[in-house]
Structure formats: structure tokens, C-alpha cells
Image (cartoon, rainbow, N blue to C red; front, side):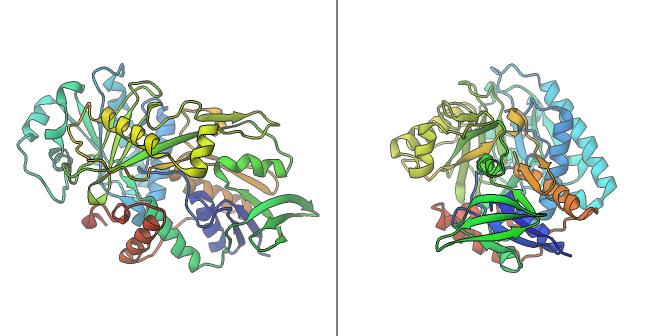
Length: 461
């Protein structure tokens, strides 16, 4: 007899799990408080190996690499295929040998994953996983002509090398195959897949209560028009930073920790077809990491891990086991009303100033675009932890998602727990041109330029 499952929360974790459960013959209710799916915190890179976080252990980095490959296989049209340039400024007390040693370990592991399944070769050839560039190597690229459709790491670096403030950086610098995530295209993929599925989607709906009824769970659901009950065999809590509120409906009280962060969008015509660029730093200080993520149409997403830009004073919120999670009043106001014009301009130009120390790029005029922002779970209270997880009880399942790329592994664990058998998650079969069109409409509907929903390089699809 098929099982009935309620998935609470229609972000990327809830929708992915709901769709996979439905594929394996389960009746699924997908419940979302908002008015559309996949509208959670921003994401711009795959985290294939956690190369943006030097502090994470090698084993966690390997797990992120494996999970990222699974994610890219499941959502191939949601990936922006371009590498990432990793730089360490001279004033950052970080040993380059650590970065290089970890990259070498990840390269070996990538070889292993491909030997296990040739379909895992989604990050390019393993021999080309990363390239080190010393000062002499970089000097040779200074006169390299612009490459409209870069193929090699040197093509990509050549397109930006003249703009780098080279005397601020340690050498070598590293180009690594860390691609990007295109959140609007992933949202489009999921929207289209939901339309063709039997998943029952409840938008603008809230779970008011959950109680046991013999061997099943009964949910009291409030929608726009009425309140009604649904009975299910399992509940999957995919409510993100609000997952604690769902726990409490079942009398479960655990400590929670979340963080509010923002990224900023600018347009800059001086840079074309470049890699993502990371300038490593010390989180939460004036020397916090800087990140420049290219999008189509000369748009760039900026992170500066300082409290003047991406991070916020008192942006981390936590609760004890019996308390309601209470967000900082500034964060609450932004979630309800958005950024004030003054705050947005100040934080955007702070990010521009930070990244401008290392790369000569910005002439962005006076146009400031809607930022990306949201609340991210901090798994198990460890702010440096980047891998996700899932907790099981008899018929209640709780997702702990930190990075989007972990969700395929989490979905597999959930389905295998319910079915009691090993399963394989397969990629979507969707026409790329249709998805781009749907993604552009989603971006515009949410207040962003449609260009950032486009494929970064068409030839890479």
C-alpha cells in the first residue's frame, strides 16, 4: 500500500524531496506558507568541494564535492558552467599550502567518483580540476586577447588578469572547477516538474497543528479560504529557518541557530565572461572574504563577509529548547519591508569598495538593484559546518539543509528510510530554451533583471 507524506516547506529542499517521493509511488502534499515555490535564501555557487571555506575539514569538503556532483546531475540546466578563481590577499594570515593540499585531495576524490560512475564527470576532466598560476604564469597572460567563449583555465584567467591588483595577492592563485548555481532556472525546472506531477501543492497555507491518530499523523491546515485536516503516514519538515515552529507542534523542543545574510547586485560593463572570483578573508572582520559572482548581461552578485555588507550585527539568532526563535528587529523589518534605499546603497557600495581593493572594475553608476537576502540554518549550532543532514523519528523527518547541493543526498536518505530499499535519483529531462524563458519570468516577477536567469555560456549547456 502506498504511503502518504506531507512535506512542509516548498523551498528547494521541500520541492526536491516531494518530487522524488512522488516518483516512487507515494501520495505527496507539499505545503507552503508563501505564494510560490523555491523562493528561499540566495545561492550562486555549487560548493563542489567547499573551496570557498578553507577552514572546513577535508572529509567535509569531499562530502560537499560528492553532493555537488549529485546536484549537478539532478539539475543540469540549473548550473552555470564557469570556474572559480581563488585568491588569498597578502594581509590574510592563511597558508597557501593548505589550500593546495586540499585541492589535491579533492582532485584524487573526483577521480575516485568518476571511476565509480562515469556519469559523475560533471566538473570537467579530473586532470583539469584545478590549475595553479605563479607570478610568471600570470605575467604571460597579460597580453592574452579576450576569449568570448573560454575553454581552458588560462582562457578564463586571461579575460580578467589585467583587472586584478596583483601586488595585493599571494602566489600562486588557483583556478578551480567550482561552477555556479542559477537559482531562477532551478525554480523554473521545479515549477515545470510540479505541473507534470501528481504532487498536491498547497500554497498560502499554514500548518496549525499536528497530532497522532492511531498509526497516522493528522495535520490541521489553514489555507486562504478555510481550515481542513489531512491525514498522512509521514511528515517531512523542510521549513528551513522556521523548522523549529513545526517541531513545537509535535512537542519537540531543540536549540536553534540561524543567520541572516545578503548579497548585492550590480551591473558593470568593464568585465566580460570572467570566472567567479574569491578573495579569501577573515569572516566578520574588516578583512572578510570578498566574492564576485558573474551573471549574464554584465550583472555581478557581490558578497563581502563583513558586518558592513553581507553580514549583520546581531544577524545570528538562536533559541533555547523551549523558546521561540526571535530574530533581530532590523532583520525582521527587512524581511517584511525590504531594505531602505539608504541601507541598500550603503551596503552595496561597501561590498564594491571591499572587492575593489583587489580588482579594478567598478564603474557602476548610481543604479542599485534589489539585493538577494534570506535566513540560513546553522546546522547543529556550528557556524563553520557546511554539510547538511536529516533526522528521523518513527514518522517524522527533519531536514537540516545548509547548502543546496546537499539536498539530493538528503532526499535519497528520506526515500530509502520510507521504502526500505536503495534508490537512484535521475536528472530532469526538460528543454533548455523553455526553462530559460520560465526562469526569466520568475526573475522579473521577483523584481530582478531577467538577464540573470539566462545561461552564462550557451555553449556549455
